[in-house]
Image: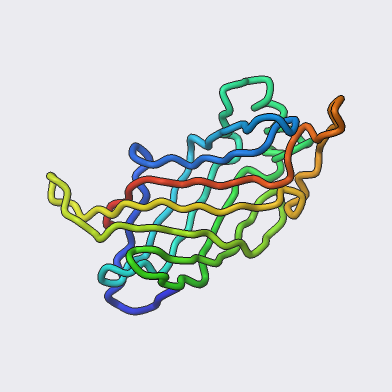
Length: 178
């Protein structure tokens, strides 16, 4: 993370940002979900992203199926009463060229903190019609949910697992200079 004085912090704009995930279901399909309450920021020096952080309200999980969402909020998965938030703080940002970065940071979820890598693509900062400085971004990565103590599962008739181990993370949106 940068400590230079010319760093601008861009706050994530919730109205123009999505925090989503996907995971295999019964070995035959992919279930997608999202979190509806979150905050975050990108630190930018000139046009270069040098840091990022995010905080997600775990209970805001939404998969279009209320019974599944309740199960995901329970002690079998996120245990949102005990672990109300999911956080990410980047501690390394490697520029890959053409607005692409590899960000390594600490993801804390379900009482466990692990280093994860996210691939980030960011636009150059622009001025929007209201005169605010704005940046666009998208990030992708994946985690093995078992690494975070999310181990509930069941075997289905064909021998596959009810819930896949790999969870793909997808974030995209906009952020505005503070």
